[in-house]
Image (cartoon, rainbow, N blue to C red; front, side, top):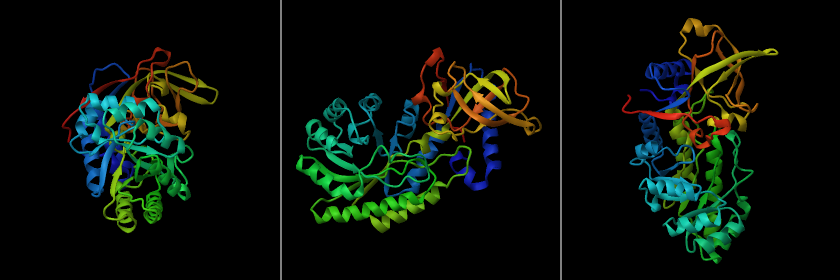
Length: 395
């Protein structure tokens, strides 16, 4: 099986349509009540393997915030070095699955004090920070821990920028690391994040150059850096062309060689890249209506059941397709695609091009639905999130 991560870059939309047809074939005849999600564990395994092999000097720590499904974690566990956690809840989830605390990095830069204390008591020893308050909390609740400073880097070109909320200006890195040392912590690392779904591979090059400069400044004051966490941001395939992982990996690998000393351990925390393309959500049309000049399709899967990202970015689009034949699909029109709740914001998009003869009861397939869907899902308005079914050993 060819995986979605590289398809768009390799041959464009025609290949993507072939992959959609492959999904339709595998989903055909599934009797489950919609909405439901189907996760192909072979894709999860392959995505984890691909990124691990592409970045030989980088340890892969899966960000379970993207999808904490235990079947996904069990599938990739033999491949990845460990996991990125952002809360006590994520820590407990991994512990319940048998993951050792030593394989966890607590990379949320601003943490609840109790969460620091409980994870520290459980054996976690690596914590991110980007404020003086966090230094104080860590020195109190996780004394002697190894800490890594989240620095602000450019996230230009990412679909979900993070630099406004997190990151210290690199000019202040020495002062923050020196304060951490004074408080009894071990300031051994740096961290950055180029933004989720980053479509500008050169952001990594600039970030590594910045880290290299900071390492030299810290060395001059007696602080040795042995660890860099480069976060996530590796893009998955949705509806637009993206840079291939090979292009991004080439830039990262060359930047590490150019700017980072050999003794420094590098880790990354991909989430979306590993989980996004593994899953498709199957949903049904529950109504069709014309409102003014717009045609509306109502479906039984919406924003509050897990498809929240269109609320974060107006231009966000999932690849949505049907099992209509080529002839029927050729006659398409623009639809407003909306969910089943009474909330007007429960709308996936205003201009989805879909077959013009869609009717109540027809099924739609929402692709690349494995990341930031199940973890966002709620029971708002009494509508349940989709149940997940699994495909295994699909090649």
